[in-house]
Image 1: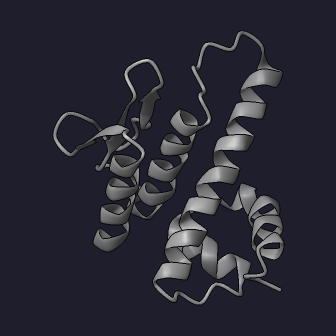
Image 2: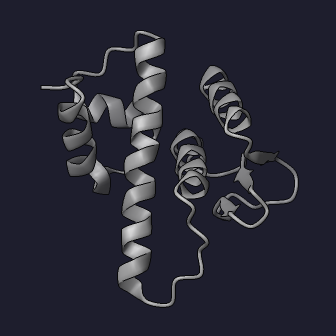
Image 3: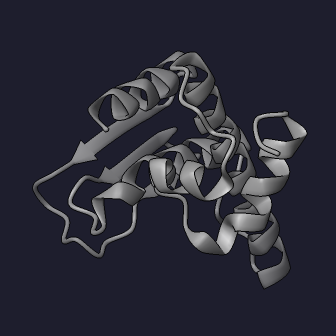
Length: 135
């Protein structure tokens, strides 16, 4: 997982996004956050389960790249932002898999490798199929 976190740190840096990998001040249930205004992500490295940290990091990177300000006042806009961030996070992780020759022709295996929540299985399947990684 260290190589993946390093990749995501470099990805954020390459896109001029600041980040803090916090291991000291956050409990295991505090969610990561991103601030478009500050161009900054705080990743909770104590998150439990630890396997979900890479997807969370990619998700927060995606919020900033998507220009999400987090100030939407109604649920439909929030749902749309979250969907777009999830989709882009999957794309970021697909690129990592491609660069590292990680076999990802199985949706569930891909989700397990990258700590993607099972509620996103349909989205992951669609993204992998769209990019000809899974059948």
